[in-house]
Structures are given as structure tokens and as C-alpha cells.
Image 1 (cartoon, rainbow, N blue to C red):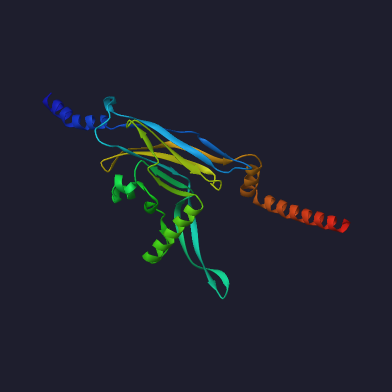
Image 2 (cartoon, rainbow, N blue to C red):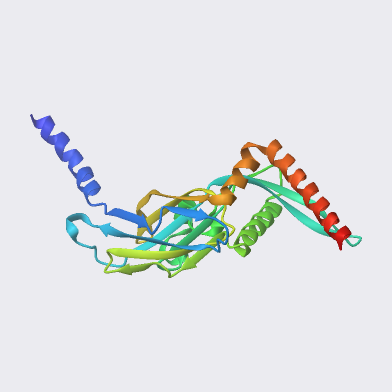
Length: 254
């Protein structure tokens, strides 16, 4: 009997600490984004609530970071150089896991709410993304290519980092808005919310998925190009020939 009591007392702190962990209830304004003719982008609202043990918020400040990440794909980045007046491909670098879209918003600047190690573990920030470079490339050159890739994605609106844009109300409710560009690739995106306190990530939730897909004529073209590439290529050539013949016929009549 005594050993049972001792065992219960040993696991009691663990059970109490588990119960003391807050819970996140995240959601998004829309679970599906449809890309069709005239699509100019969208704005996604990420919001939710923080449920504290016994319903009491802790003393001190809490921070929230939200991350929206697209599918991961390999990519080859090539550097162009102008030689004798002609732009040609020079050096290149391969990356195995580059998200097609990455956006992060936080209640305060990341360097003020998490340390560098924690940011690297959770990939918080554009400079902490694990792009998985491959090949035997000099470390300095690899950093140059990595920085160039991030800069290119930022200029295309596919990589975003915004500080101070997560609004927290009474340390319970939070919300943030992220911009989705018109060039956003299709796929399943994952929204992750992280609750941060005293430089540590207390809890992270990545159970919210958003599907980006093409609809209408754009969807038909995409399906033909991916699943019926031979037929799609033949149709493209045929349409080009018909348009060329029609244009020649019109000019002859004029």
C-alpha cells in the first residue's frame, strides 16, 4: 500500500504540470481559397482563444506568433551573370525543402520574445527557415544563395514576416491578418499558433489546414497540364496553328 502512495506522489507533480499547460483554440476565416479568373489575392484572418487552467490568466505578458506555411518542394536557384552582353546561367544551388509560401506574424518582434535556439527549433522567422541545401557548396556561398532565395520570395510576396501585428485582448483572445498574393501556389497550407511566455514556447497548435485550389477554367487547364500533358501539348500546338491560320486569312481578306 505504501508503494502505491509513493508512486502516486511521484506522478502527482507531472499531472499537475500537465494540467497547468494552457490550451489553444485556433481557427481561420476561411478553410478554402479558390483561385479563378481575376483572382487578385486574399486576406486570411487567423484568430482564436487561449484557455488557461482554472480560467485564470498568469501574471506577466504572454506573446503569440502565428505561422502559415505552404507545401514544401525542392527548388534549384540559379544565378545569372552578364558575359559579353549576354545573360547566362552561372552558379546554382539546390534546396530540398522550400515552402512555396511562408508567413509569420507575432505580437512583438521575434528577437524580443524568443531566443535564437528556440526560434531555430520552431523555424520562427525567415532567417530560421530550414531550407535543406544539398550538394557540396562552400558555407559562405550557401548563405548567399539562401539569402537570395528568401529575398526573391519576399519580393514576390510569398515570404512574409510581420512584427506587432498579432492583437491580443485580455491575454485571452488573439487575431492576426496575413496577405495571400495572387501568385500563391495551390496545395494544402498549415496554420500554426504558438503561445510564448518568458522566452519559451508553452504550447503550439498546428491542426488548422487551409486548402488553396484552382476553380473553373483555371482548374481545367491545370488538370490537363498535369495529368494529360501529351494531350495538353497537342491541343496547345493545334490552337496556335488555328490562330495563325485565322490571322493570315483575315489579313488576306483585308
